[in-house]
Each structure stands twice: as C-alpha cells, then as structure tokens.
Length: 263
Image 1 (cartoon, rainbow, N blue to C red):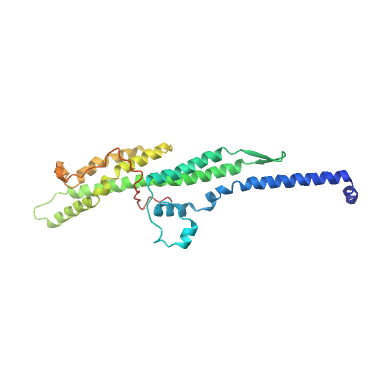
Image 2: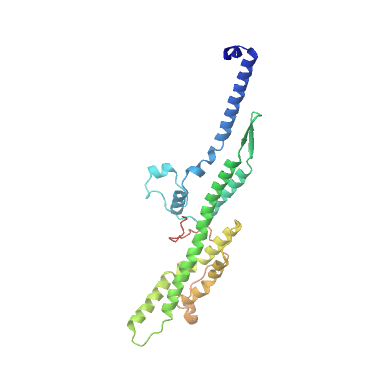
C-alpha cells in the first residue's frame, strides 16, 4: 500500500513541497534565533564577576586582557558616578530596544512562533543588570551615611565626656577622638555633594531613596561641629573650605565601602 502511494506523482510532489516549506521555515527560524546572539552576554556573563572588575578597573577588561596581562599591568581606577550612569543608561536603552521586539513571528507565511516567553525572560535579565548598578549606588549612599553617623556618635560621646583635673588617660582618649576626626576630615567634607548627586541620579531612574536617608544628609551640620577648631564656634582660620554646591562630582572616583558590593 505504501509503495503504491509513493508511486502517485501528485502525492510525491506534495510531499516534496511540504518538506521544502518545513526546511525553509526552519532555516528562517534559525536565522531569527541567531539574531538574538548579540544579547548572549546577558545570560553568559557572571554579574558578580562583572561588577567586581568594574569596581576595580572602572571598566570591564576583556577575557583576553585578563589572560594575557597581570593584575599589576591593568590600571586600577575606581569608577566615577558618570561611568555608573553610562552603564545604567546602556541597559535602559537595551531594555527599550528589546521591548519593541515583536511578540509573535511568522516564518514563510505559515509557521508562527510565540516569542513572548523569551522576550519576557530577556527583559527580566536586562533589568537584573541595570538593577545591579542602581543597587550598588543605593548601598553606597546608605552605607556611607550609616558609617558617618556611627563615627559621629562615637566621636561626640568621646569629645563631650567630662574630664577631671589630672585625668591624663581621659585627656589622651579625647585627643585620640580629635585625631580621628582630623584624619577623616577631608574625605567627609567632600562626601556630601557626591552623595546628593548620586541620589539625584537614582531619582532620574525612578529610584527614590527613603526619607530617612535625606534626613541623614542633614548630619553635615553635626559633622561641622566635630571638625577641629569648630567646637563652640572655633577659629575661622582653622575652618576648611567646603565644596561648592554647584560642583559636578560625577567624574570623581567613588570610594566604596565594604558593604557596597552587590550581593
């Protein structure tokens, strides 16, 4: 029976035509699949490794760079806020690009592919990359202010501790607190404007920081009280010039705390 059917010319031609349609549709589908290969780094690259290298070098060395050059020969430059913005913007643009991809695709006029599951998975992956950089900046602001708040609390307690006449050990302790304040004076004086700019940048991406953090930024006045020469008013010649509010700190390297790295 099968032999008899195979001898019918019309059926043979129909089978060949169907086979040709299937082969051509599969070919078109594979080519369409290959067009997404440019996004493959999003699911093949390791997010944590990427961020680790970004925080060290201010960019991401290629695999060839890491294989052929030692750590000492690759310049280590902490990333600036502008470089963080560049990374986030690239993923925001990528998200918009993928969002415009079609939900269904028809090959050779008859084979329809539902692209929505892959499209949604790809968009979620892009969001993970973008969120990694936003979260790092958010953690940096939170940790920086928490660290300063803890330092100020300890320093204030130490500097306001009553001293009795002849209390040499107590005097040494107070001097130690003054020394610690002096050591971190420059870094702290210059941290407020960059943190404010970081918060403003996150706000442009719809990332609102808690009101508590905005209130913590007001600790600047408390920090000024701790600075050498400023307790009780202090002497003007001891006061350091503060950063101007209009200064753009986006191109200054961001100093990272131990708790900043995205987990």
